[in-house]
Length: 603
Image (cartoon, rainbow, N blue to C red):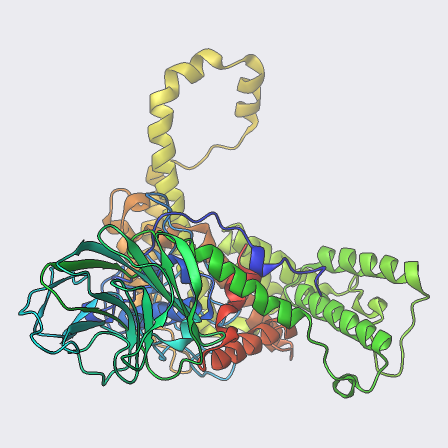
């Protein structure tokens, strides 16, 4: 299998700067914050799908024309300074389902009409600032909720008295690893500052680590404290100007610290329970500022998490399934069976999507590889004989390929005609698919108008230069080319088609599907309200990426009409694996470091 997949642990994405993942489509109290270093974890994938699902539900409930799943996707990304967000243009659970990611008004559902899992399950939020409810009265939290200062009065006569503050959310084990840093802005009088974490019921009048269910690293003596007031020598002291980092690794239930970007040894082991980041102070003037990922960390936490991810994949790759699970085959025959199963999955996926030439090429390559080692033959267990994947005479697959190509080129008229010619029952059985295609046709007309207007503007600016550079040969070719429709002609055609589309569907609905007809119409017609749709809030509708989901949905409908599955076995395997990894990640542990979409599906 390694020959087909890259090594996800070493995948290079060239991310720099800091990252905040939010969605304007969510209410203010539901905004998600995800640090950049967690981008490759299962937790980040859950947030991605939850945010897009919430945005989609807002759109279904009558949001503004721009409040669709794409609205959240426009900000759910990894920001590289001021560069464009690095976005994923698909959802792992609905890549080949009836989710129209190019048109609003459609929802994700499976072949049985059920909403896809994950859209309503919001993952727990990460700590992002200090809590105004979880702070001692002796402390003052500043406006951005990241700075804390000891305001007094100082403890008198009781060395155990102090003040503490905890973060606004507990650390979810689903994230796999959580890291934050504390910069000491001032050590105050004595530098009694402790950095650590605690449980939800710990009183906030003690330093972290001094009482049960709390742990801390103290700057005045360099000791660590674990649920008791007797410390253990751990690392160097810290003072004004130092940056102390604290990380909790749920893969092995340990905690570690860093100082000024340098990692210290493991501080605590066998951690359990609900944990909040916490800071404690004791004397006047002590002042710190926290960083939960809003800014770049001093410590290279991304390299650390890549190492943890690599350890997880090393363990996965070293796993040998029991032979009884492989039909009691010998080890050599088991390896052969696994390879042949992979070949079947790939071949069926290509055939499912109508990639006829690719299936032929793949079958030929596999046959050559097989012949190089042994004579090809099938055994009693039904292992692959690639000849059975030959589809040279499979007209259905060839026709599906033609239809897909037409949609991907934006030629919706051709796709409609070919579908009616080769698969006449598809639109009768799936009227929502026909509506989807007609909506896409209107978008393509508006796309032509938008780019024609842009081209006309550029041609006007360059007209003089082009006149000078023309030759007799180019003039001859231009005379032979058919005249392109003018911008006015394109606009008139779009207007007439839009009026006809509105007339046909203004009173229609599709009770058997989750398509919101009026929402879809309102959003696509909003394109006509802007002089320049390309720079408008609705510009996402014009993207070529919107053609892919339409082609996939039409292809699935055709397959179902022919008595075949709407989802290829490889896609089902990915869905199953993704859900399984999420279930495991909910318990914490190393599964949290596996993100199927990021590690295996992202380009």
